[in-house]
Image (tube, rainbow, N blue to C red; front, side, top):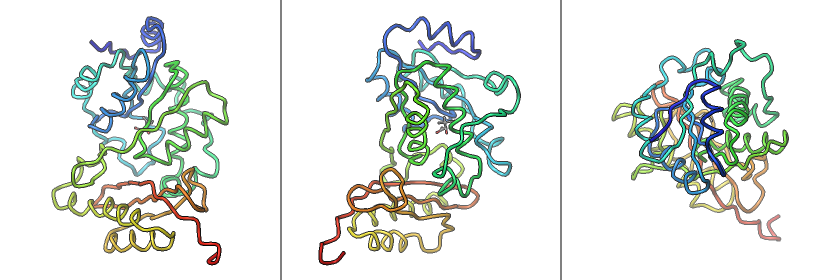
Length: 278
Ligand code: PAF
């Protein structure tokens, strides 16, 4: 039975009643199989499982989908019950931001200004601020985030490292439909034709990952994206450093299909250049 709490006092009391280690999965609701996978992984790693559902206004820009973002609380609760969530914290904006808009936010640094950050100014400050607050409020020992939002995951790891927060961050691989589409709460905005078009993103990533040199990876991916409104296609280091170098790297893409913005990424491996080629 999942205990649903909405206030800070209720959360504190519910948290105090959980002995041993606690893992948290933070979400904005509209839970799908990707979230269920996060909950399952988290459940295996700790004595107790806490989840949060909060559509965080601070991470949405003025022209983004905050008001139309899907809110499906009853279905989310059913997923939490099924996956063995002990406590579900579902606060209102007034509970999360009792003093109104945050005057102090977590600055994401230079990585917050590129890729998603370049298209969505202020987004990562909003994400890091709410994640930091939820880590404090839940007192979790471990926190699980999907690799689908790879830049978010990388920035959360950097925040935890640089601000010396006492929590272990665990990344969980992206869950995909059989045809490759990465699961996302925003997929429900797509009609059938748009969903078909959206498959180009995962196709591009797979085509890129099948190549070896950086130029070949990018060229193969770009070829699959022809005709799409692409915000970026980028090859970066596994830590999102600008120079992917050799070895493990990450290929990332963002594109618009109709009015829906989709992102995806994949690990790639870049061979070291042959000594005579460098
Ligand atoms: O990935 C998300 O759903 C959100 O960015 C998060 C981490 C729950 C913060 O609002």
